[in-house]
Amino acid sequence: MRTAIPLTVLATALACSTASAPAQARARVFVASYGNDSNPCTFGSPCKTFQQAVNVVDAAGEVTAIDSAGFGPINITKAVTITSPDGVEAGVVPVAGGNAIDINAGQVTQSCCTG
Amino acid sequence: MLHGLTLNGSGVGANGIVFNSGSILTVQNCVIRNLTGQGIDFVPSTSSSLSVLYTYVGSNGGYGILVQPSGSASASAVVDHVEAQYNGAFAYGIALDGHSTSGLVNGTVTDSVSSNNGGGFLVLSNGTMAINGNLMVMRSLAANNHTGLQSSAGAGYDLNAPFLRISQTIVTNNVIPCSGLVQSYGDNTVNNNQQPDTCGGGLIQKE
Image (tube, rainbow over all chains, first blue to last red; front, top):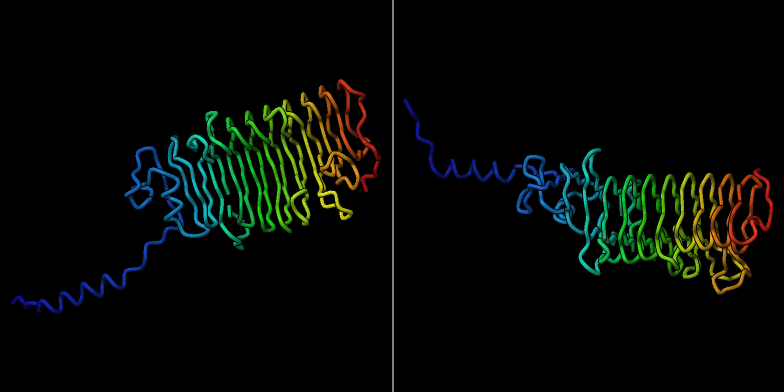
């Protein structure tokens, strides 16, 4: 015999499930030539630009380029590592009169990493 | 840390990396070229450290690497296995500039090349009695520049010039091999420069 679940109970259960889901960790994010900045910058759904990846990565996190492409200029305001593996050329081409990478990270205490 | 990046100004971008604040910057396995200004412009207003390792900094209109803290900030720089080539005709491949700060500017360059720039290696102090610049260059090459190595108090005179010490370094094919007070450990090769092949206003002991 099937027992009907009251709608209010189901709604409460869904709300609790949503509320208890941990915030998505962004300690490591990715960019790729085929990425899109509306993506979450995961390996499976990489972003398109270094700037978006830097924006969403945790402080002291890491941004990795998956393949070779130009990923745009960057303004860095927190400690972060930006890297590419061997065999990948991660390009940064500034706009005319602009800088490729600006670092304005304030005083941080990480023992490594930019900023 | 910036690792494995290619920064290409395409002849219109201003600077490769401009560091204004943040404590620590490590640049490793990067190529920084074709900027109209500096390859690396390390200009913190608070005390900070820079490491540049296994990196090419070339064909820029200004300095290859310029370390120039301001205010009372100190800066330390480690440069290892770096090539600074074909940068500005009136700029240095690798330069420590302490003239804008009352803090200290200390740098070490090892196993690196600075060639075909206006100058190879420069350390500049603020000219006060408290000498605030130190640069050690070891196992490196200064070639095909106008000035190979220069130590200066910053105002066109050598009073209270900073310390520039060289060891196991080749200085060749420059117009001027060394300018200002350059101290030698007596184990360098200084030859075939246009002006007299002399570096080492003061010979110093290794230990």
